[in-house]
Image (cartoon, rainbow, N blue to C red; front, side, top):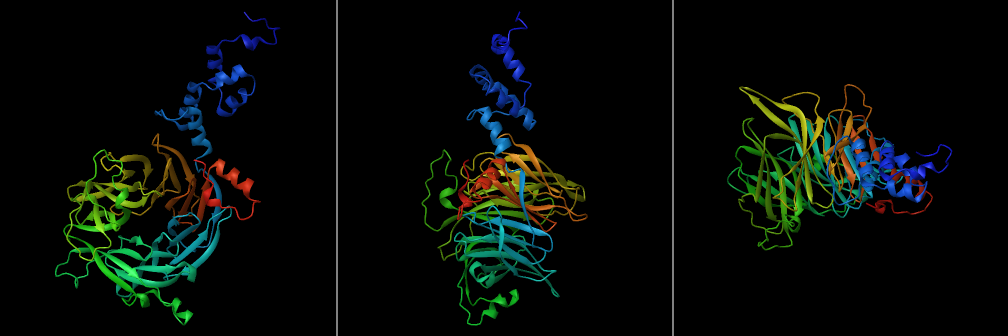
Length: 491
């Protein structure tokens, strides 16, 4: 027995006893006991303590063998973007989409007000350009930077007296987001994407190219003209729908059967299946790309699918091409995104239910991640997100993926944040939204810094979320002039 008068009685406690006592401490208390003495420091580093703390913090158990559990807990609590850093305002109606430029120096947003905005990212993100591309009730629901960060493409839904028209517009950033080219689209949910810095991808029918009505993926190369009268840059979008400065050619012809092309992404062929154990024997050309399309069936009882096509953007001879990969999914797609390194593609999906003549989408939202570097791997599914109710229609909200985390908008007033290793929801980021408008339309991880997440919602606001670690660094560097805030990640 230890003498109660012995001031050094704690020194006589065995390792198992100290380990048991320390198991009741939280992470801050455990870090404090490390400073007491060398012996306590040694005991407090025991992996079992930090493993249980991680489980307790996350609310689930999982396995990791590549890092220590202490560093794992630090990653989840100190490096996850869960703290609201800044709220930006400027839109006057719901914001539908947000994206980052490749360097991370700029953000772009668009929404129900028909306005496209470009923001300069930093400790205090500021508005750089704003343009009324279409007037309400017309709206813009998708925007994307080209790699050179000189232009944007914007998907515009234009409500006219004759009905709904859809156009992809090219905006020049250095000209204050002036529309410099535009092309009408047949498929409103395709939304388009960049192929090169001056060429975007469009889905069309183009009956004058072929005698049938197959769907064509069309390359649209624009030539930016210098207009003598600057006021011409302010022309209404419909006045830019000409072929005068847009060269068209068909890259791929898809049989127009029971499917219609919806959301699309493109990666370089060199990134496709690069980690597969099966050696690739196909020859590769500089213009080779993989086009990833979600195809929605025209009938409820036909399963939707993801299709992957190989195309050569330099080829001038189109052909009917079979997909190199098809993934059948009995789900409606709510949004798609690529990781910054184009290694992963992520989808939000709601499963289709059919009961006799009745059909609907389930409330549960699955977020599916496909490894494009090893297409043979089984897709990962992340759960926990839910729509407000079962319905016959779906609303779009877009996900985003980083090296460690996965995030998504929702029909609720929160954005969901998952840990990719445990597949567990580690945070629901709150958005106080006015009723009846409620929903987080899109999220985007900063491409150079996975500790930064941007979200946009129906309350017309842009929210920038950061980790505790990144906020601390920004405060330390706020007095440093000309600091490059896009290269701060230490993950």
